[in-house]
Length: 212
Image 1 (cartoon, one colour):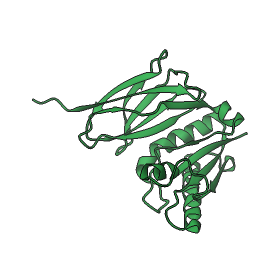
Image 2 (tube, helix red, strand yellow):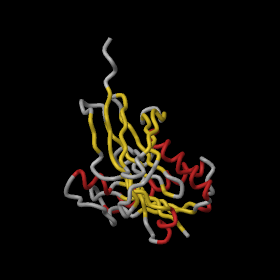
Image 3 (tube, rainbow, N blue to C red):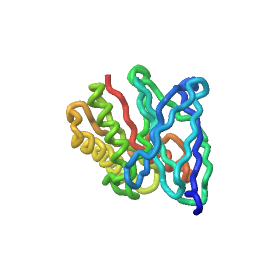
Image 4 (cartoon, one colour):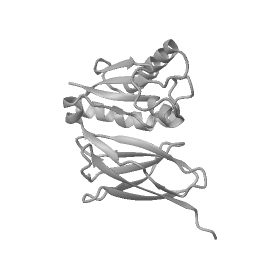
């Protein structure tokens, strides 16, 4: 009997000043939203290592009390079996986000091209965000951004509608509507170049900003 093939994923968790953090990392099958494994980063080095079944697309979320969780995803549906995350997962404290006006992306939100309806793979990240907002009594702005493909007016409307979709979902999960606003910025605030697909992917994003 052949053993099931597995994939290995490694990386590092730090704060915004690259100091290693002891954090919990949740691994979930994005197709089902089911958490399949929980690992922890080494408190001395911030390093973590996970062994997961192959042939799935995984979402991960690093979280630590007092910090805003950060997520991402890795597609293991190809022959790829060993992944090292290229950048550390950097966590910012909620207080630091307020003090320094930091906006952070929700990396596990999924939309079809040029559409604003949330795909089901997005729900796990938003459910956790809804729990955090309610438990901490936080007020936030949801910011939508696009790349530069298409016309400016259409991009602005798309970014607004994607931010509104996130707001509507959070309210449906019990969050206070008065503590969540949604804004769209179209292509006006890129994080990376629009000359490459990788850069455009970074610019198509929804971010959270804490409101004091």
